[in-house]
Length: 162
Image 1 (cartoon, rainbow, N blue to C red):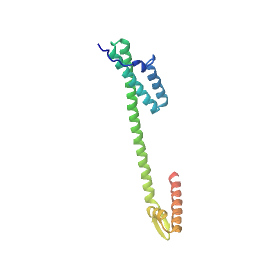
Image 2 (cartoon, one colour):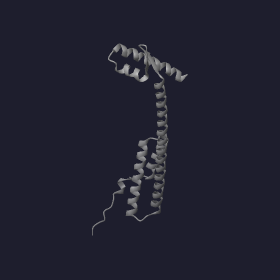
Image 3 (tube, rainbow, N blue to C red):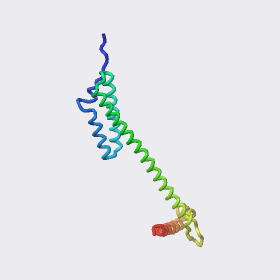
């Protein structure tokens, strides 16, 4: 009769408490909020679940094994809650950043629409002045308009901050 194949579970946990690495990583994560530690925590929980599953298949289910399984499931649930909280927090931060960028864009548009520069007895809009300052073939004109545009923007910056 052939011997039933068995997993070598001793390689997973060499006489150590299976909860210790999980609890240690959990504590480290709550102190640092480091995503790499969170990833290691998830891996440690998966390893423990795998180990406990294999134990339950190979042996009769003991109360110690049941307690460990329940504890690992509780820890897994805690980590899932942390991940959900992080997703909500990230979503909120993303919305806040988008709102801030929209506000800056609106201020820029208002400033752009308001700025006019006098050059060669003509009033140039911001767009016209910017185009000349960046693209004119006449280097002297390009530098003049660039200087006018820069000084006007500095004046407006001072007005906005005042």
